[in-house]
Amino acid sequence: MNWQLRAGQRLRMLSDDEETVVYNDLSGDTHLLSGIAASLLERLRQGPADEDSLAGYLAGEWDLDPDMAPAELASQLLSDLAALSLIEPMPS
Amino acid sequence: MADGVYFRTGTFIACLRTRIERVAASFSLLYSDYPLQDGPYADFHVELAPPRGLRRWLRPQVDFIADGHAPFAALPADQAFPMFEWGLNWCVSSQAQHYLIIHAAVVEKNGRAAILPAPPGSGKSTLCAALIHHGWRLLSDELTLIRRDDAALIPLPRPVSLKNASIDVIKRYVPHATFSPSVTDTVKGTVAQMKAPANSIERADQAAAPGWIVFPRYEANATLALTPVPRSRAFMRVADNAFNYTRLGAAGFEALKGVVAHSDCYDFRYSVLDEAVAAFDRLASQAGNR
Image 1 (tube, helix red, strand yellow):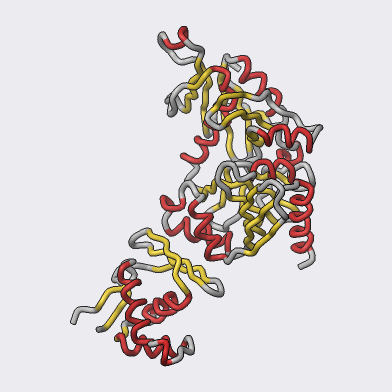
Image 2 (cartoon, chains in turn brown, cyan; image 1 turned 30 degrees about the vertical axis):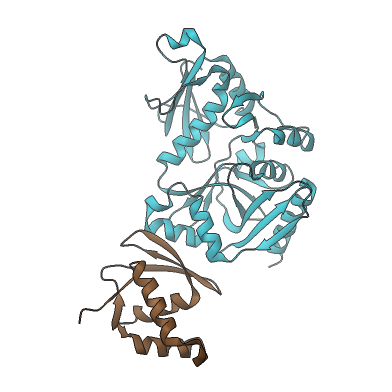
């Protein structure tokens, strides 16, 4: 499945070492995201991507051990971000 | 004061009209240092007056009237001066949307301001009252005004509102301070207002840069503790304490980001005022050494 930022929104962020505050000007919502979730969001700000490449991105960016199941982690994070209306699956 | 007195508090001009003696007396006591204005322009026209109709004969009450409207239910007449203070806070927090407004005290020393966001009962005003009589400038006891375009903190130095046990605590800690008469049986318990230091009023045109966000909590007999809070967490907590963060949208986010990004953030637990003041002074001296 391919993912992209939800259309029409502009995100504003404030990050510290561990977490990121994200403001979505389309919904007016403010979210507190983990660093890893925020990095996934930042990656999608650069352009749409499929789930496998996003898992690979996380594994490299966060130096994830294969035992940490990057694919499952990516899937969960993408689901969480979609539930917050920050991202959406691309139409096939 | 039947014709109205125009006075400036920081960036706002207010006009107060009242025939209620206790309001006039407390106003004269606590607002004697504020610059008077000629009128007729004011940001807020407020009046304290007995309600119209039969109620005024059954039980003495007072209405707060802002620009011709009474936004609140009447209160017992002896609460007229606290009602004036609460009402003026309401005027600012409901109308001054060109600022991001936080429910927080804010004090300044050595050019940097400490914002103290806190729910009622946390000891915020007690701590504020102690600090402003020990070298810190009062910007506000209740409403932190953040200018939207540059995140500067705008002074609104008005009397410090104290309640219940903190009234006597501060009267002992600052014996030379001026207080309004205590008023009992309000929704906040017993309340009294402490006059703002003259120096803070004189410098009400001087904005301050953010330096710290400190979440205070008074806890009897507790060991002093100053615990760092990550900026992202501090942001969320301050946003929760804001009157108009959501209403301002992206501008609110950017204004608060501007403050938080330039602030060291802490949880602060205290039980002894001398220790609390010394801890804040250490923060200020460390900032001065940067």
